[in-house]
Image 1: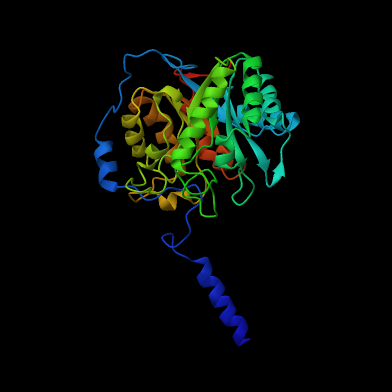
Image 2: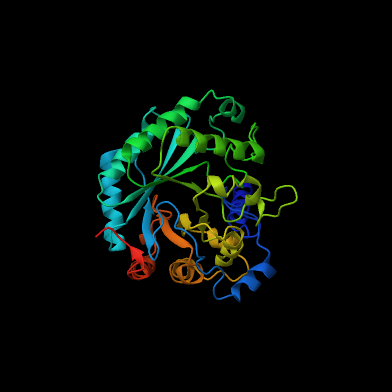
Length: 359
């Protein structure tokens, strides 16, 4: 009886770990500089639209209403798409998905990129956004060596992808190796489990892939560079600026596509927008998930529903360069309807004419 009681007390203690001691999710950046966030909050408009030519796929006065959903097979995609439309009350004008070489350690078909693209293409009047991994979405699984890519050993993989895009012919967005400024994917220099990737090699590889698409005559693709809104400190760069080490250069990037969830204060966007004022922005992944709010700074966290409301209302007004928002509709922990109050907030947020929908 005594040993059982002690075990029960230990278990109870383990359940009530404070939020400060709980481990951060793998895709959470380091804590914010609160003074910078408060300073950013005072600014009404950080980045008025500059007088510049529109980027590829960019709309002048509209924001793509987008969603990021599963495309492993056609029937599953349709079910999730229909569910999203029912919840959102409007059809999206942009559909995003992921394509990786391995998934959970399993090699994917060589034409998986094209299959996903064709599944999205069955929805009329939408622009596809494919986020590509040169490896596996799961840490610890296989990935392409940076040196092998630079040595040309995988050129055919990228040439095939370029060929699929060229044949598709319609406007589309493509990104490679997102959230590179963290430490959770194999293409980050800070990855903990051994990798030959560095920030310098990341840039060279991005430029190499960009060159392959150009050499293959692809003109319909907008290249989207997708950092985490805040990552891990890198050399002399703090968490809020570490993305700068991986930036391929204006000539090689059409859009900026940060990941943004409810563990991150909205004012983080100031730094990104000021750094790349001439680029349109897509929230390449955004949403709310349970328990992420415990890492939000400064306290108190406003709550998941309020965070969603601020994203939909604040971002389009404060940052005119935001031209697309793709909600990460990827399962019960992040789906909009997990909190009933979020459904009305989301529907109201995308209801205006500013958000372009496929109607």
